[in-house]
Length: 448
Image (tube, rainbow, N blue to C red):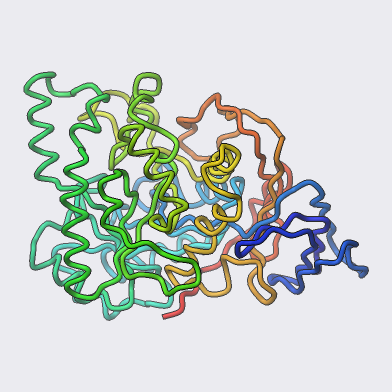
């Protein structure tokens, strides 16, 4: 099967150029920069005139809820949402039921994904207070890293024993430790104080005061200390405060990656505490969406080398579970379908360049986790490709949402960029509104 993607504006590895991409079966055969499309016989021709062509997005932080929580979401439904949003690879988190904290549970997730995932997949192994001895037995070429909950969140996977934390960082080896950093003791004290004044379910507007800057900073400082003590690779997940940015080394393109890096997620780049007034618990997540100043600091860090990756922390809940305040409403929101259009809006707003966005959403996740032959448009690499068109307004409605939960905090928002085509392993899985639900992604391979 040979496909020609012609007349494209190709954004890749810090450059933008006009050209054409030839796909042979599941790989990129050739990238042509001549003005005219290359002659030849093609089974499929896609005219990308006026469009941007980039690598498929690698979302390194999602919660697809399978197994055990499939009323909210499942691998099939959320991978379809990913495909429609230009995401061709995802790494799923371990707080499912059962939790992914044994080799058997990890194997079961891979089995489920092979059956139903439309795009490429892998799964983090979850750390607990007593399972670090399993790390050396993990299939390290099949998984992106270790997920460590240093703060209590959805799924109750808190690791709070000091000796256990030391073992996680000491025994992780070459696997990145991706840490959820919030100080649970601080949060519990602040929740108790809020309940004393406001009752059992304090207003959601208090969420960023309960899950505060201090709670995040205390925990992130501890994670950084432990990583440095044991020489571990630490990736601070969903960094949400300006204060925490001071802990993160600056990365300069072309240099070796530092051992301590950070992720920003879409929610913290789009929303601020002002949005609780209009959206309520729909924008409740852990760590909390905080001040406008925190959001602006995170946006600035997208370009100054302190934020290495953008992910979604895609976390669907049933809409009825999102009702209430700080104590009652579930934390998390579904974002995987809309992350790319949302970040393209930040490009239009001048927050970052198109080339930088591609680095943060495609190249850097591949580099950080050691993804083999994905994340770049290179000859011989897997043909994971997304084609997006600017100046194509469309509105988020219930009818367009592919996540099983059926809602989005972006409901009613009008985007200006539209995902037209998604190729995954050379297969045209999303074609201008039509999804190939029979497609199956591949298990991601990692270089270790």
